[in-house]
Image (cartoon, rainbow, N blue to C red; front, side):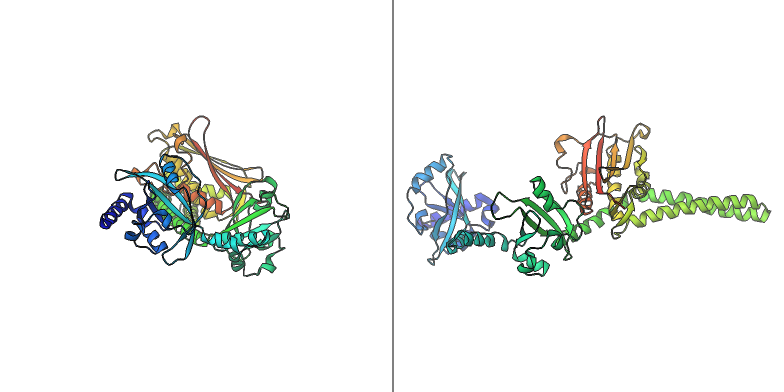
Amino acid sequence: MPWRKLERALRIRRALGTFFEAAVVPIVVIDRDASFVSANAATVLQYGYTLEELVNMHVTDLHAQACDGVPGAMARLLSGEQIPFERRAHQRKDRSVVWVIPRPSPVFVEGEELLVSVLQDVTDVVMAEERARTEAQRAGVLWAAAVERSGRSFALLDRECRILRTNGPLQQRTRRTADDLHGKFCREVFLARCTRQPCPHRMAIDEQRGVVEEVETTYGLPLRIEAWPAPPNDIGIAVVHIGEDLTAERTIRTRLVTSERLTSLGRVTAAVAHEVNNPAGFVLLAHAIIRDRIREGNLEEALSLVGSAHEAMMQITAIMRDLRGFGRDDPRSIVDLASVANGALRIAAYEAEARARIERKFECGVSAEVRGGRVAQVILNLVINAAQAIPPGDPAAHRIEVHVRRSEGRALVEVADTGTGVPRDIGERIFEPFFTTRAATGGTGLGLWLSRAMVEEEGGTLTWRNGEHAGAVFTVTLPADRT
């Protein structure tokens, strides 16, 4: 009975779940006889048949061209054999043709062995190929099909990093025509600020590997560049450039950075209050004593107390300066990394020193052109993470070492601890967003992910390794200022 077939189709839909029903690509369920058993809403929309009509049809009813051996293929697929399918022409109810590549897989549903097949629509590719008459035309059509609608900017460059070809999105973003772009060097179009030298395109050519870099472009947008060496060819193409606009991603990331910064400040509020209250209390006490000593005529002691009160106020000023630098995003400037690290350590001291001794190992004159507040936030996150990795109760037995040094033309900040280290089974995941081992104590899993993102925005890297004897070592590498 037709109504029983429809009822069965709806049961199978429910059994296959939301993924099947909500999928935006057509998916059909076929039995051993190559008859349709069920289909999702995208199939009904694509082909124009109702579900009731489809479940009363055979697979070959959709074929716009004759196709032999369908039942045998069904049996082979159900037995687990992998059969590669080429594209096929299907006919919709309105007699129009859609080209698809079936992707069938055997499943066991409602007590039956069935095939679930995704029908990948390749009509655009087929139509593009049909319009091509020569190899050059075919290459042009495939290029357009692949890159014009992607929303990402594409370019082909030669060995000198000159642009040979561009797509529409790149032309729109640069507000330049194809003729104006072609023949230009990459640095003239993309790289207003590239922290890595040589540039990503040059590295992809020389080292024959993919290179990913975030850059500031000459046309005012932050861009993630992927540079890939081109396959061997005789038309001069050496590297494929793929660019993705990071404006929206940076906006979201900035909001998350601000949120994480407030969270970090909340964790160290007690430390800041302690660091300010002690000298402030001394100043108030000294003020009263100074007044009494002046009345007594003891000017020498009064002047000595004035000097001590001045030092206490300078301490408060330094703390406020650290907080002010930590709490805002200043433009990039040349900053002394030892000074930045010292400021972060002063903020983190109350929480960190309850777990371990803090040791500073700073080389002189290590500077980088970065946003100091961002780098301070990264160092603060790493130091607090190091403190939380150390068991409480014995701060004299543990230490957190912060190194600032140069290495091979790069500026390095290393945070090492004597804690528990990073288990190898989660080492690859610690930089994933929302991955945390401290969910029970309020961990969000965003600290390390955001720290790596902030460092990469400054043209650097954030990596980790376990220490030789204990604990973990996190290394921030930044492009050192060369002036």
